[in-house]
Length: 272
Ligand SMILES: [Zn+2]
Image (cartoon, rainbow, N blue to C red; front, side):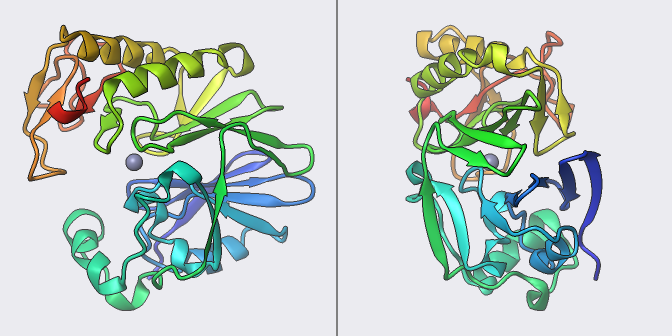
């Protein structure tokens, strides 16, 4: 079954659509990278191999399953060293229930990516990826996961935010609100280096500005002055999640009541 579609969004970028998440194939004159590998349903490697004739490497923005579960089609992938502890390569049988429940209701075990048994290569904040005419810089914005990373496309003046900052900016891992404050202040030092933003869920292109709203939320969590609204959000059934800014609970996307965009969803154990 056909699981992927794609669209060329820039001369050097192809957006690949998985069900609820995107992957990006970024091509320079000499080589390319595939950023993220999706939910792992369908042969992504075969799909990508048909999109480019350039040699390419696989880079992962962070360790969450919806970005890494397709990585088993390859024998090498790059991941921020700080996300190695949260990266789990699972057997197909372990992955299938989540896929059936949340993503692809008709997925079969045969079409899942094999378990990743290859080499994870660590990358670090500040690393440069030179593809020939297109250069990327790793900008680590920990919070969503300890090693969650953005990628600055230097010549194109685009920051690929990934999941690091967004409408829900989830503090679901071990990082605290103070860690997020620190990361977002670091991100502000790149403000004059980009004009546009790409995210990997809910639409590719985003306008600048909502990272500052997320920073404001994170600062309020630390100070204990945020809305601390309890959310009926069942992504993690064992733990109660809170929103820093009040949300419309009847909206499936939990938009902010005040019309702003950036928000932080967090567990109480991360509210420090
Ligand atoms: Zn994520």
